[in-house]
Amino acid sequence: METTFDVRVWQIERGSGKLRESYGVRWSVGGKRHRKTFQTFALADGFRAELVTATHAGEPFNMSTGLPERHEPRASSVGWYDFAVQFTDAQWPRVSANHRKNTARTLMIVTTALMDRDPPGVPSRRVRTALSDWAFNTNRRDDAPEDVAAVLGWVRRHTPAMDAWTDPLIVQDVLLVLGTLLDGRRAAASSVKRHRRVLHLVMRYAIVRGILLSDPVPEGRNLVPQSAGAIDRRRLLNERQAAQLLDWIRARPRSGQRLHAFFATLYFTGLRPEKAVALRVSDLVVLTSGEGQWADIVVHAAEPEIGRTWTDSGTRHDQRRLKGRAEGETRIVPCPPSLSALLRARIQEASLLPDDRIVPGEHGGVLAGSVYRRVWDLARRAVLPPHVCASPTGRRVYDLRHTRLTMWLNNGIPPAQVAEWAGTSVAMLFATYAQCISGQEQDLRQRLDEMQDASATLVA
Image (tube, rainbow, N blue to C red):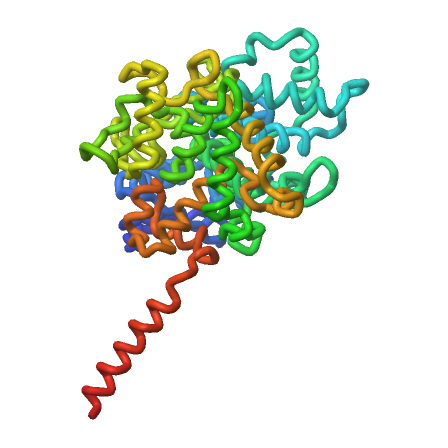
């Protein structure tokens, strides 16, 4: 490691960014210039003061990093496995169960990519399970069985120190593994993006902890595979298909009426399944009297099915507020008369109380995703012709939401209103459903003709 005492430190530079001002510290070490930017003057001034103090004290500076030896990152003294566990524990209380699960999967893939060799006599599947289900799960790690603890001990000894991330070839190898499935096929673009987001968070945490100087993971749109964000219009159901599927589900013994209410809610309101399962009787607010009663559905919570090992409650479903909204915020979704009548009839027949779920599981509690997905698959096979059943049409329960949002857009509902009802942004709405919007060409052409006629009158 080359060092020098040839150091010059300049005054702080003030710059203007797009969002906020920044403050840069410039200095040179052995003739090589360095610069570091801070968001506040106080931080920049403190860093500059440390550099000046080190020069006055006669401390040697590293020629490569430009920092005094005592400021050198601790990458070589911190193991990857220990750091990954520390990162897991630091972020665990602040993130959702789904984020915890995704983080554990990313860390598992990265760790296996960094190991110098496989554990002798231990199948790769057991290693992956030990990492994702135990090592990177704060709630379970201390209770790991002896055989799992032995595997994790081996992994800890055979993963490199954090200074491995300064090797571009190792970074490249890790990113290649993150983009590849176990069978050698390319991973989905959405999965790769999710892995990279987690990895960037890990690296930023390492920088804050003084372990790394900078994020070694390259950024840029060209480095990440582009995902097809737009919905394939073949996934959408027409009204006849939707009606036949709902009728088949309603006719099922025992659970038919209950699940019919669930699928009808998705179809007529465009709710996500994790929000529909969280609806309570008190969330249905009737607006009009007599026949044709419109109602509002007050959406205020989501209960996605993640797994009991990842949630704070120890249940399979996480309990979350609405995405992108503050605690206690709600959104209103219109409930048409047909659905309003169906839900009110169900509430009356089942003698549900205001705090009861409108569509609970068979034994109470949250309706399980495995249950409604199985019933939906049975309905598709029973109702749709074989060639349609084999197509993407309505293959996922989520396609009921896609169908409703597309119908709203195609019937002239303003995109801003559709976005509000759907709980998304207008930009995301257009990016997702642009290829599915149709049926308005004639009206738009008529408007263009009227504009042309008006312009011709002005010219004449």
